[in-house]
Length: 301
Image (cartoon, rainbow, N blue to C red; front, side, top):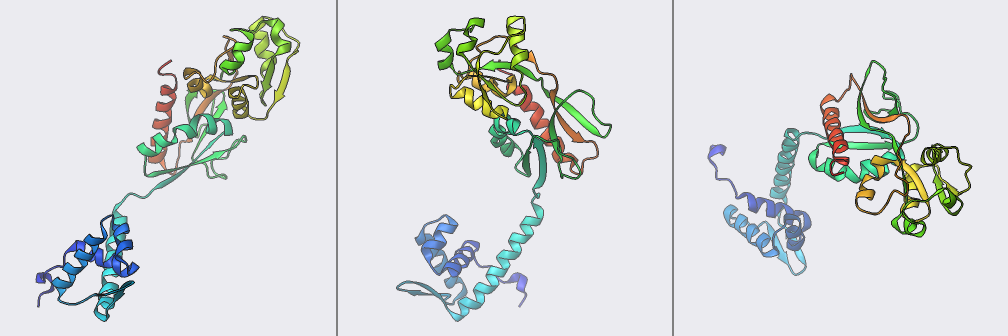
């Protein structure tokens, strides 16, 4: 008999029998397949009728494969494995990319936007290395990096401007209500200034009041800007932060600016990628997404 002309069993029946034969339980097979228990039982009965043999013994507590069922199930399971493996060879594999950013950039800007990235780029597995040190593209296995630096870069690197390092003052609305809209110089000894590792308060106060100010305010000192932002959000004092990191909090009223002045903190934020990237297509997609998100950060301002 020509095998190619032999009738083919119904696929739904084969899938139902494969699952039922693994679980020896119609209910569990139905949960896997996303159908009702009755539908699985009906599909298996239809397959048995098509083949003219009994594949499963129905017992008071579950199922049991018959001798014919054991032989047939082994072959069917192998056939489904072949189909799954063949399908996987046609599907695009995930590309792993590693991006190095500071902990504050990760916590306050990148991570909140990751669901959007994953939805747009399902085949890119973006791994985030949050560190204060400058990662090496080769020895650290980094594909992209956000660096706070000037505008000159090594010849082998491509860099795109992301954000200016524009420093603003921030506090909670509740705290602002205690001292009025804008504190004056006489209010300083009543304020708590939240410092981070950049220590920009002396320079910022000089910008606000036009002269060097002896720091009479109480101080809270933290080693990361993200912690300073969190402390400001909880009403513990006034912090300084890059505007782009707190833009959403300012828009949505969780934070306010007690002082209107903006201090340019020096080195701006750039996305840096080696020109000879080993994964150019994936890097290009991440670059386009990050530049788009950077533009959107202030789009509604």
